[in-house]
Length: 279
Image (tube, rainbow, N blue to C red; front, side):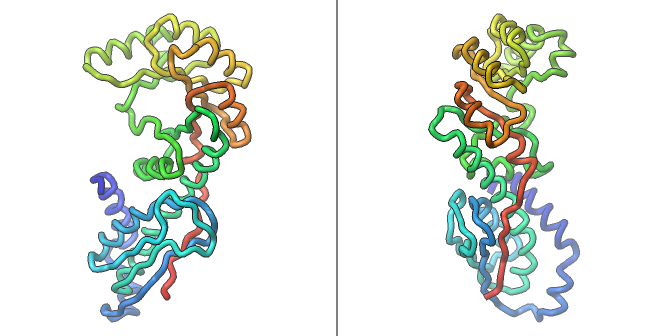
């Protein structure tokens, strides 16, 4: 498991357990064994089963975990997702951390799948954003992939993304692109340069520069998007962003944009209802 994931899990366990599970310690002698099952209470796309296996081993290496459904699979209410056997106290101690992660990740994967289904049959790909749970971006973006989406940049050093505040400080679109291109050359980097644009005039200026790999078309209506895609004509990749509701996605994809980015698939999540029950 990635070291970043280990850090996230260890922090979550420390947060939840701290000096011990005093209720379990009070009621159990310590040698009781049990069998428990993770049960879906609503339908959706499962994400986090691999992470749950890691969490359980982090709590007690003797626990035996058997996944019955793979990550990325559709689950239905009443489905048994996985089973765990071993020390009853250890299972209870790990329960909430396992469920917190799996419920959130499954909620993200489920919402992502709905958005991806809305643009299926087109060449447009769904992107996530950096609007994620602080400290859990790796897991949020993992869930997006399991739901069928594509990850945008993970962090600030992945690519250059010039937004309106950058443009204001640089003194204009051309200047901002020139400065990022010079920084990239000096660093010997292959990072792509993306720039946020809000009008046809701005697009024309960015095209004249020739230094933008991706053009982020922000808050444009369908007519403007269609005109922008035709104007860019493959000279840069295109990403549509802003007010991207589920109902609007098919029409936006029909304009021919390469990507649609949606912050809502990670920043506004309905956690999928999953329970852990002793048999």
